[in-house]
Length: 180
Image (cartoon, rainbow, N blue to C red; front, side, top):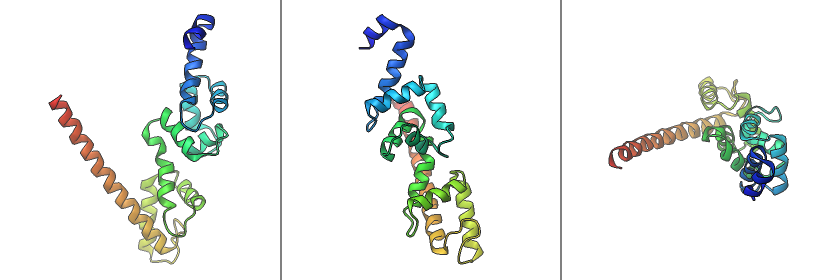
């Protein structure tokens, strides 16, 4: 198919078709949605920029859902992962972690994370201050004390796991560098 497109229309059309196919290859993205996105954002650079800055949502997964008129968060996450680096899912991952706290819905977790612009460090600092304040509801997050404690513990554990995984990956890279 691409060869025929190149023969008839040239480099630009071939690049567009490959871009459309890359979008369509993402699980959960229909051919019609892939076509729409490719028409709106005709190359990967423009598409990536839209995922990073479109005003429709404060973070890439929400933007992907809005831009693609895509109701599936899972498909939107796959779309973001296919075009942006792994850090682009960080905001959405933080919302998912916060939503596991008893009494926090996904919407309230999303609002909480948004108020700290998706920063785990800023949220963790606010939670530490809330817990230290000894108030029933945290002055920085508005969370009840048990929720603030639970989320803080979750973030600390996640950070420790991430650090351990990064150290393991660094060690594996060093082993591979010397062994292969």
